[in-house]
Amino acid sequence: MIAVVVLLFGASASFAMPAVRRPPLGADGCPTAWVEERDVFDLPGPLVPDGAVSVTLCELVTRLPYRGRPARSPWSGQARTLTTRVADMVTVLNALPTRDELEARIRARSKAEGRPLPEDVHVGTGCTDIGFPSELSFAVHYVEGPPAVVLLDRNCGTARFGARTRYLNFSDGKPIDTFLGFYRDQLASRGFVVAAPACPAVLRVRRSNEDVITDVPRDDIARNRGGSAAHLPSPLAAVTACRYVRQGDTLRLGHSRTLRDELGPIRDLLNTATAIEEVRKGGGTEVVNWTRCGVAGSTADPVKRLDVVWVADVTGAVAEIRVWRAPCAAVFPGMGGVVAKPALLVRLDDWLRG
Image (cartoon, rainbow, N blue to C red; front, side, top):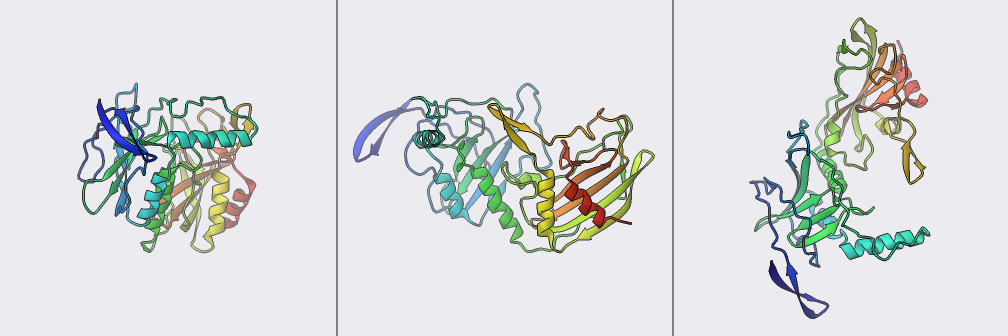
């Protein structure tokens, strides 16, 4: 333990504070090993200094508990660096609440909703034990000196730099989503021409389980989407719709169409079609538009007709949305399916008649 003296409200006060362990950093300023620390002294003041020239969102791939092996995506471990709106991003980090500020906000909100909280709400003491495949941090870079590395603990909902801890688990404390929004805008500002996706001529169907396609839909947009964004968070640059018909153990392309104009309404249509719909039930929520259409073992008939919508957004990222048409109707933006909405089915028929 070491003692530090800080000046609070014009008076000198002495506090005992644990020695702060700092992670080893690579050439990009990102941690190369993780430092687990959940009992750090909470000094007042800004989380990081002003005057930054860039902010990097770092991702350190770690091992999942109970599995003993890393879980990787095509982008695992790749850092993203923001060089535009840097001051805005620093402002977001420095606006994250302290424990007392967060508790006051929670109390005010609960009181306004007619359910006042007890004396001690234990803010920051309850951590989940989710086995995230990676650990995230922000490396805030300056012209001189080392970066300020803010370690993000998603299980405890904290952001920590040195001896300062701030909290993420409030409606206005989502620095990762804010960073990704700024980063998508930065990618889009490059102004390059985005190629329209093409329809594969053939899609194979798994022989051992013919009611599903072997792989899951491609989703390059996922890397920069964020947890609170729509499925297609950025404006679209091109959309290609493809219609397939089952022939033996393959789905063969019948018709296709590429669109580049008036894509705003199409993006809205696709975001509505892929959204998860929830209703309040008891003390939580319940998803009401899940479907077992296309789930292994859910139907005696394999897929016979399939539409695929490929989208490329203004960042250059590409994603695939699969729409089952027969023997049942469902939309698959990822592994799970939702009930297909008539508006999307009608639009696909308009595009792909022939």
